[in-house]
Length: 465
Image 1 (cartoon, helix red, strand yellow):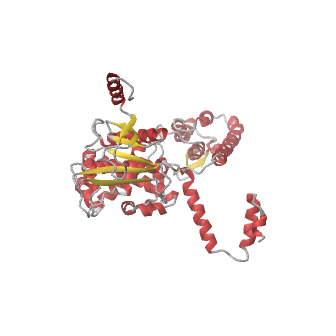
Image 2 (cartoon, rainbow, N blue to C red):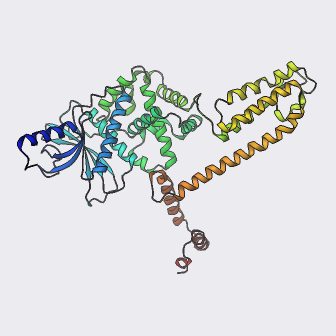
Image 3 (tube, rainbow, N blue to C red):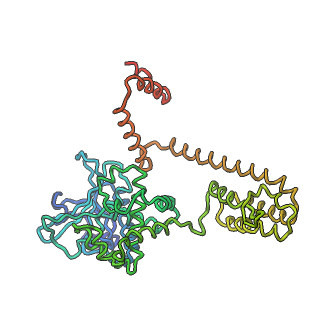
């Protein structure tokens, strides 16, 4: 640009400022004291959210910037804030692209003082390795919560440390995901039926080290439990406003977290187990099936089996249920009695048709027609059709299982690199291998190793040494 006339330089700079998203930024002295002063670094900046991402790899830098800005907006929506307010400080995300560093940590949030008069919030991102989207998301949430908790502060005492409770960052991320898709409720069904799987005390006491030692199942339960806790807090009277107050203090809080929760959410102090009850009610709500939720083929068949029952009276006049296949017990009854015996089944089939798998709706129609014929005394068609319908259901179940097995096989065989989807499986596999090495039998295990080599296609020569 040095060969351009002055007026063209001014115009070019004006256009760059108006674009404002991606440009080469001259690093000021007050930011990144560990970097050389006055060095020019490519950066992507969002002026509304006050998030600056710096690094040389343009595509990765812009992707990180997009993720950070989206998460900042989603957090504002979750807390009921206006999108025009982000905070008093900028957040700097630095992409570390060098070869140095032996740590496996991909992101590292930090707060640094500047000349004893201000605080700099940074997120260091290790960009020379495959970046895990979930890990990046948690780092972004941490620095966003840092900014909220440090509003109005320019310095920190030496004894003060800035940290976000593990359950809070995971709970917020899962709550934002739940707002977009609330259909994934199976894990909440497990938590509701077996509360001891991940009790509330364990959720609040979980540390970063504990989380790293969890297997995939425990991590999934922890995320769900944290999500339900955050959602239960937000649904309290004035929950969003109370959550803003809680977030303004939690990053520097050093006491028992339940004390701080009761300070900003007074309803949790009503009764000895108020917090536990509030959390359990939220889990029950999240586990409840929605009216528009479609059942899969297996659950559709299970529900249909439960419905195909006739309600008749025994010799004492007491009601009892018998399978629809035993329809001949209705022989000799009046039409009104037959209608009464099949009424519950017919209503249940109609209700199930609203939520069953689409492939099951023709079967439900057949069963409804057969029930109507039973009331009219036309039994021959039932004798012929019921076995055929039962065979059709078995075929559909087998086809459904084969389809799921094929999809699992396809996903596994097409996974040419390790992703986050199988991280829990890989950790479990490594742990089992370690435990097996510790308990190896000197007589039996050499033969098992040879069988394993043959099954996996490895050379047997390695085991002949």
